[in-house]
Length: 633
Image (cartoon, rainbow, N blue to C red; front, side):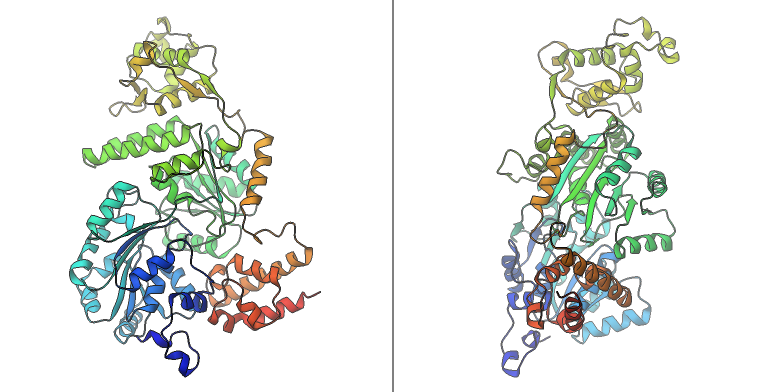
């Protein structure tokens, strides 16, 4: 396809090849590149391969969309999920880009029409699932088409060390062999050094540069609390901080998803369930409601979320511990894609650690895979138990120096936890584990420590041990926190052969002999849904407001601006319904806010608002100006 005439204009102008910046502005309505985007676009446009690591909401898609528009031929985007393809294509079509999907939702006739357009050079971008791309028929189709590039999105799926391994991705190495002259760009938001190495090896990107953006998402507030009554804690968190906001709640099991969604709905929160065991029609309807409506909370297993472009998710909550920091970062990264303040909130306890260890031990993976999985879980538990800045710990995990001792926007920075010398208490706990034979779980051990003569304790004769009642100075909740922290510190570990049992590790010997001190963190008081104390809540509100971008909140602006913004939102919802697309495909919140703030009077002034490209100006310009005029004065 001849890109010279893409931006339109006079005959003279059409003889001038468009630049990346001119297309960024004319098609996407953006005035400038962010971070390394310009360098990546230039590299791929010139025919180079590369690996791109960029956080969710950082603008990864532009890194392959723009080169596809600048190079001859069609850009092929390998995408793992139908929802991602559908929403991205809808947004591109709305911006005037010739885009299409090739997936299982199409009829034979529709798929044939897409293939014909590809061969005729009538497509700029084609989104396709990896399993379809790798069929002999589809690979043959690609050899007959003019290709601009291959973009492999969610590239961490190719790695068995990644948090979302998908076997169908492994075959993508064939692209380097079959199409050696077509540039390939692999993109992901989450990958540690081990995962990056496997992406490069499996996709044959050796020698290609890696562009690694900062992993920091400063608008996200990280908060991890002790699990007491997770359902009540979640309801309090949403009611106090996110009433009427869109959010995602992650649970480990399908049953927990159903129960949690039902309890939130009973509490008056617009909550819907989502998991792989649901009827496909119901599941799709729930996803569509979450994407297209305001203020819907989706409760889901990790089957939900990849490729969800909804920009105004104000919180992501975890009721169960994820598998790794990569999984946690990927899932929490779905909050605040619009750059506004958002919360990543998690509640966890000792049972979560035991359960995740059991899942690893019982998996069919090789020993090497299990060792890596345990190390990743240990790193996440350390993040949960740290008394320092959570953001610093996160960035350190991904090999990025934070540059500051604290971020001022996580629970530990806003309300630093107190620590106490728990060496004697730890010795009592470890002695109890040893003297009861290293065969029992935390609940039983706590009964012995506080001196509770339960039927089982008496049955095993442990009421006659020297450790019986030796820990009566702490209550049951405090002992649970101690046991959890001893596991996190590596002095205890779940026994893979006795479900729920705790056993001593090598480091426990030093504690028992008095050679190692044990410092423990003081836990959040019972009944708290989150941050420690009113001071922290006030700090949170201040930090949230300061981290928002200019114009992102109209709470302090004039009433008439808020009224205009409300009218614009209603108009956008109506337009989205008519076009059958999510509201953010029509215009993002930031664009509506830019219109409400600047109150443009002419098409040229409206065109200057970020997010208004040529096609959107043509399609919506006069209607938007009428709305602004209706609120003038």
